[in-house]
Image 1 (cartoon, rainbow, N blue to C red):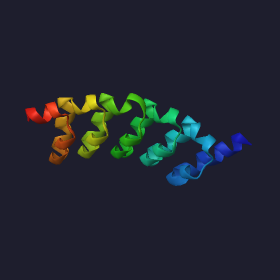
Image 2: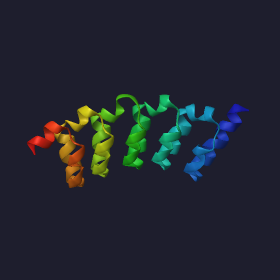
Image 3: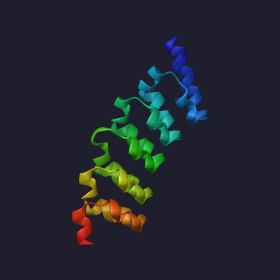
Image 4: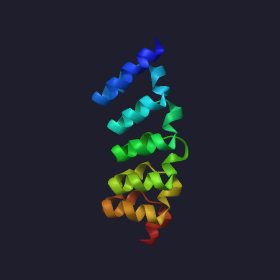
Length: 131
């Protein structure tokens, strides 16, 4: 039964990325289902299991689809340099979701400010004082 249920979801998700919202919770633990969902709609990351919201490849796929999904990442991923740079390059406002260390990284902050000058308010105090 589980395999049939899983296969059904794997067929449904590419056609309707919001399908992950309505699937049984135990299926949000399957990496292949989650990866397909976040590639189609990064916001699907919000509905995924905590373990997968802490997985670098899943979070990167979600952020590539929608930078704001960085807000749903867990663990150290909101400070992962590559993921954070991907997010701020798309949308400077995502600087508000990054870790304290990332808010203190001049490269990240400058990239975010290039996208949106108003995001400087989310930078660390030390960087704000140096600008």
